[in-house]
Image 1 (tube, helix red, strand yellow):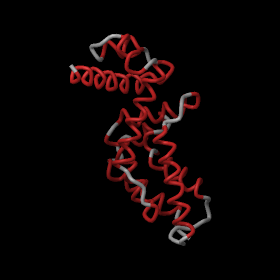
Image 2 (image 1 turned 45 degrees about the horizontal axis):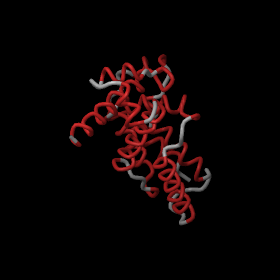
Image 3 (image 1 turned 180 degrees about the horizontal axis):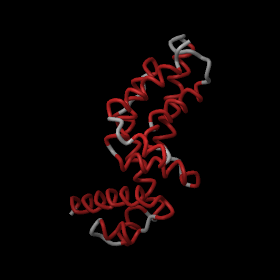
Image 4 (image 1 turned 90 degrees about the vertical axis):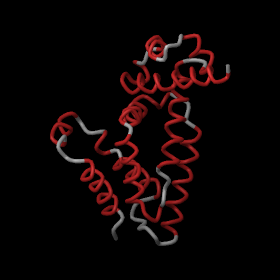
Length: 187
């Protein structure tokens, strides 16, 4: 029976990730999520309390994967940005969820893992600057923001720019992200 419960929970999370990626937080509908998961709304409320709880669970899972698959190395921020880019490229649903979270996520509970991970990243950048391993022309917060946003560059462009960049291959996109971060860090 526990396997059935976990399978239902997994289907709900997968369906919710797709729904939130497609429609955003406000536009997502629990009816569609339940139908896509071959479940019902009662199960959503049972496992996640409400739509906001379901969104938080999706974001916690996404953050966990990202922290594991793209760990920070403050002494090699260009490659760290490349790994973040790789995460976006490998998972278009994640890239869309990240965009929706930036647009609508301010009113939602902070994902503890993201808060903790951001603090760890900030501490790593601060230490690298204090040790003279990376320049301090930008504050640690500015460095972290620049690296994060450059890594998602290709997934957050306007439709007009997107149309102009369709033919740029993955390898070149990644190389641009890595080179841009490297340029930021040059003395």
